[in-house]
Image 1 (spheres, helix red, strand yellow):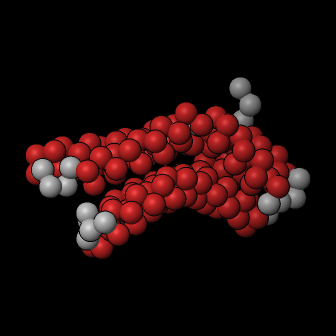
Image 2 (cartoon, rainbow, N blue to C red):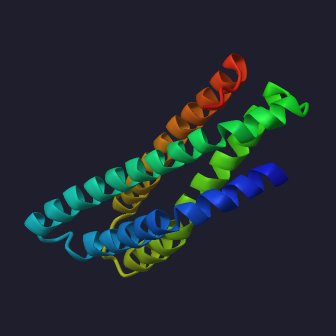
Length: 167
């Protein structure tokens, strides 16, 4: 658990700008989306902007996290040599990735829920529209989290399998 938290803190510190940008942009785009839902042109522009923003920032976070995984392969190789099993290393990676993307989802999710509840109570949006917005917000980071986990795991397992080659 401590290894996961240490790696998580390091990853968050290294990607704080991307995470902040993701949270602010997704929250503000959803607030904008709700405000222009009755103007079809504005609505389509904001939907396209929201999808592009969420997808591009998610891919940026995926790239950043993958580069961190490449930098950590020596760390995991050393843990393996100290007696950690492959199963334990996979568990560490899984916890770390889940916590990272959990933070990425929860920070804007709180604000988005407040926005959606307030708009629903004032009859500005329907319940179905609110669920679709939540789905658009939740789905890309979850998919990128799965890709990140598999990529991270493969990098570490490949290093353990082939051994460490120092250049």
